[in-house]
Amino acid sequence: MSVIYLDNNATTQVDPLVAEAMLPFLTQYYGNPSSMHTFGGQVGKAIKQAREQVAALLGAEPTEIVFTSCGTEGNNTAIRAALATNPNKKHIITTEVEHAAILSQCRQLESQGYQVTYLSVNRQGQLDLDELEASLTGGTAVVSIMYANNETGVVFPIEQIGQIVKAKGAIFHVDAVQAVGKIPLDLKNSTIDLLTLSGHKLHAPKGIGVLYVRKGVRFRPLLLGGHQERGRRGGTENVPGIIALGKASELALVHLADVKKEQQLRDRLEQGLLAKIPNCEVNGHPIQRLPNTSNIGFKYIEGEAILLSLNQYGICASSGSACTSGSLEPSHVLRALGLPYSVLHGSIRFSLSRYTTDEEIDTVLKVMPEIVERLRALSPFKSDEEAWLKEQEKAIATAQS
Ligand SMILES: Cc1ncc(COP(=O)(O)O)c(C=O)c1O
Ligand code: FES
Image (cartoon, rainbow, N blue to C red; front, side, top):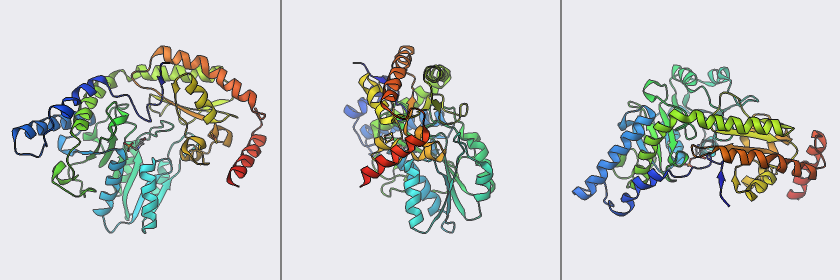
């Protein structure tokens, strides 16, 4: 059975051209880029080119690019660097809908005496910029806000946010892991000080990322070691990963031009599902959203059951709901939107890529109504929110006892 992969916000297929570019650096060119000999030096040259390719995608200078091991490392480094360079400031601002790579860190920092403000979002997943402005003080060291949300795809007005943040003199960090390659960026004309990206979300392999550090922004490395990355990240470079990310960035720049096609497929999927299936709704903002993401709540059924049924057709999607994350708590992102319980539990994220085809969308549009209808027929509470809620509470109490 062929796979219909609609889980590209989780990870993406490595582009064959990317694999081809990195392969010689796994086999033939294995020298250490820090070595004095020519054999290592040629690897150093390839890294230089990759740095330029990533910089071109971001509209940045090559010297502003620091290679890391992943998005999580970039996010950790950014927050720690901002705090270390502003030792008198003990306040952090972030949002309720950030990735765990920010939220877990913030929780730990709270236990170490820092004060963290978690900005709320409205029903459509948007921030209130007045709340941001009111939260900023002279003691705010860093504001860390994602460019686009991984679950709903909602895009925040980053430059407007940056203006507010910079007016108060705080460091502005942006987790752009989901945005890079999907939205054009121009960091030269931006308020962003630090920005995180991750290779495996843009058709490079897992285990390679970048932290962009604006020229002039004070910095402290998280990994102390050798002089690699101009002393900003110790550790011998993941050379094949870096070469891959360079190539993936070059290709992303080309594909950004036809991202409209991806959006049209997403819209056809979404509108088709809404038209064919009663009692379902789009989670997040209909317009201010990544072009590839659609998060839909199918009321009165379990997201887990939908995913398992889709899986039987080889269709990969995901849900941020309780069962998939191994806890009894539904997605913190969807909860922050204040969605009713029935929507929280029945929400599915479809995330497309440049490889998604018309035929794949046709297949999903064909099988989804049957799946939802079958599962709803098994559910005794087809449209009774209150009865559904009681049943769920009972199930949780049983599971916990
Ligand atoms: C918004 C966001 N930030 C950070 C990460 C973490 O990236 P990595 O898997 O490279 O550590 C992810 C990955 O899911 C993400 O979606
Ligand atoms: S989706 Fe599985 S418990 Fe709600």
